[in-house]
Image 1 (cartoon, rainbow over the protein chains, first blue to last red):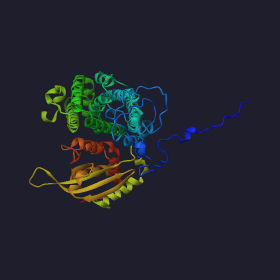
Image 2 (image 1 turned 120 degrees about the horizontal axis):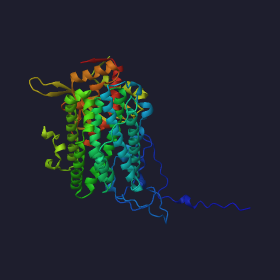
Image 3 (image 1 turned 180 degrees about the horizontal axis):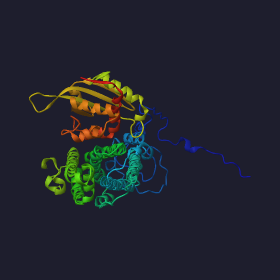
Image 4 (image 1 turned 60 degrees about the horizontal axis):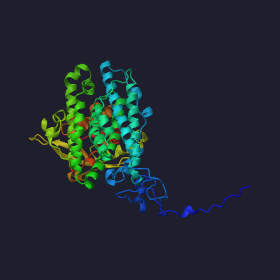
Amino acid sequence: MTPVPNPKFEWMNQSRQWGVRVKPGKKGLTLGSLNVGIYGEVPTEWNDQTRNPRGAIARRGMPPVGYAIREKAGIWADCAADLYEEAIQRRWAPATDVPWDTIEPLPDDVERAVCQVCTELSQYANVDIETISSWQHQMAYGYHEVKQFLATATFDAGRHYEVFRKRALRNGGGLGLESPGEVNRMILESRGGWTEAVTYLFLLRGTYAMTMLRYLERFAHNDAERFIYGHVIQDRARHMAYALDHLKYSVAHVEDQTTVLATLLFIGDRLFARELRDPVLREALAIIFGGGVEGARTHGMATWEAMMREFMARYEGTCEWLRVRRAPDRIPEEMRRFLPEAD
Amino acid sequence: MARFPSEAWFGAVAGVFNGDDSYQGAGGGHCNCTAGLVIEGRNEGKDEDVVEEVFVLTFEGAECKGGVEADEAALDEVDFYMHMPRVDWREMLEDIRDHGHATENHTLNSLDLERDDGLSTSKHGDQYREDLFFRYNQTLQFYFDASARVKTAFS
């Protein structure tokens, strides 16, 4: 009979800091509240190339994983831990929370327009999922608050994909035409670092999507749509909060970063403007805002233009807040005409 | 019967809001912000509105702590503030009373889009804090929707 090995328990005294006792606060035992002692030390560079959790003792001989994002300036946002908690706390479930029974038959042209917009918004959500997850595995574990928050953002986007697909298939319609996808490809294929991806995914596309959702909420046909758009706005506002905080941090810690961001937007705006020439989304939105094809030709298009002015005001306002200077003559005409000064 | 706007009214609405668990799920839930509420009046002879009354609403975790009357200087400190003429606040609250919740162009988001100078803004211009209006929009809407269950008189 093989003798039972005598355990030595040598691992039990292996800790960089023992005796930690974090107490739950008013908001519970939050991720951010765990940042005490050595566990709260967030270095400006994270050179450990393994999956070693921040604060644990590294095991010798671990092969490197190959994380590309190891600098705090390339990922960090102070708000990430709080946003993570907020995302968990304020989650919702499309299957049961949306009052689906409030949807009633709509005129055919309006239903087609709603379905087309939902098709487009599903694609936006897909791009969110693929973009964030394609960077997630490149982010070092030293910045776990951001990795965890972005995991919730991916889940949010999964929920958005689900809810827009459900709306399209709920009321006698179906999915419409695929979007031109040039901006989608630009976001997915940005390779200059996570900050570049944040710039395209959240600052440019995110601001546009938020503005569109706000107008869709305004022109919702029923409580279900009002619920959907209102809740997606909240989720996207959380993503935007991370983006703004990260970009602000990046601008403060990376030399010449405002110029880099201006150049990125100069490139991104051109693809965005080219996609604006495609009439599909514009016409679908005008039908929704105008209450049908007839109304689309008049006040529907006028409302679309108001939406674009709102988008450009927020987009430029954010750039200004980040101190990213953009000369109007470097903004494509398709966008420049909606600048507040152009009124 | 509580008079709008008054600390008693904000407290009564907070009581309904805090006591209804349905406001905590489905995208509601923890909310941490201070929001100013400005009731504007008409400045006779001039084409502009003037601040008549200011209240500060505080949300902490799952609770609304109610609203306290403040002076205009308090607007420098809040995350964002919502401003409308008295008559428009009344119209919004009457829509909520009539339907049980805000409809169409009476939601906070719609009012922010429809009004020439918006509904929500700030003195500090910090976009991160201003955007709390959107991050917690459903909770803010739930709060005002809860006023449907408070008998309201208007001053």
